[in-house]
Picture 1 (cartoon, rainbow, N blue to C red):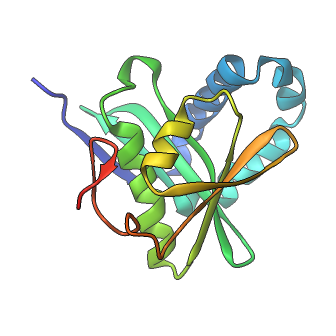
Picture 2: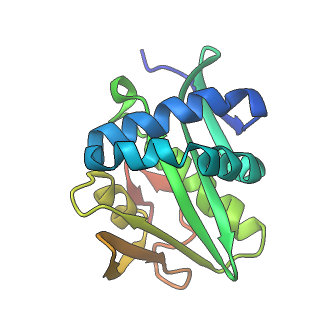
Length: 164
């Protein structure tokens, strides 16, 4: 039996779970940055509070299992973070959260959607399957843009691939 999950907009009461997810990400993907990340906690809390209306929470039976949030940077919608609990990965939840970002940003009028990801982050494959295209490297991150005019843009995603 497949677990049924729901995705909803975040509330301030979700911020402790966001903290735990972001810390888990740092420890998994960028452990050398943990001290610096902890030193910037005030900034992170401010960022999460400011982005609360662009944050989505995934739940299963009322329990937190993941999230994503994005930011507006000028004319671009930038995926700031996407996270799924380790034991929930591989079941399509990351794809669903990414679709929430794409849909929400486009609904709010953004035609340019971007993200940056560490080169060794396995989420790169998810982004590429969803229609994000590598544009450049900067400060140790691979940057991607969503091609709104590409054949895959706007098509529903099934099993990480656009449905033709």
